[in-house]
Length: 114
Length: 109
Image 1 (tube, helix red, strand yellow):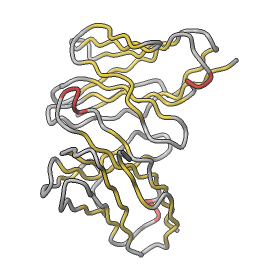
Image 2 (image 1 turned 90 degrees about the vertical axis):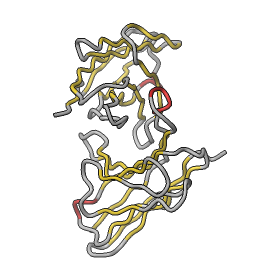
Image 3 (image 1 turned 60 degrees about the vertical axis):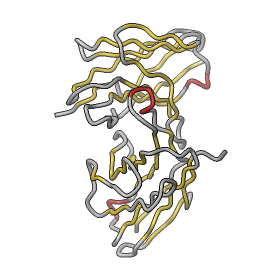
């Protein structure tokens, strides 16, 4: 069982380019999340999905979009990358509330926008 | 608003005990998580508290006081591999985790 996988592991991207970060989980979790983590700051929620077919905006959604066509996949798209989007991006999933709200994280994607 | 407060950095000696404090303000409360994050890696789950009191799990214990908006993580018999960041994350009324910036723990021999 792989848990959560993310691709690519790292990427250098020219400003203005479009980029999709992939996230797949095999735990059949209902909820999935995208975070960015910058040095000295906590994890900041970009977008989330409580169940397949629904998505919601987090704390820092501008410049990003997501889709949730099925339970397993939750891609994050940067329509036109800017240098301020240089960060480490983590995808996570959880199944339920309370202690079931434990989030399982993917290994992260390190993105550099030049 | 929602706010998490943890010390930025702490230093401790191998074999010793360290307590990492966290105070929080959230819109509603559905428990509090502690995660460990080694440099360059993803966060991993350590503990979950929903009721007041102490939860013990091996060398790690976590305490919660809901009335005070306060939690701490206690690490005993520190090992070099415990050098990491420790993230406090209460769950709000929407079952979203609110993340603090984390406490970087440095263990010295």
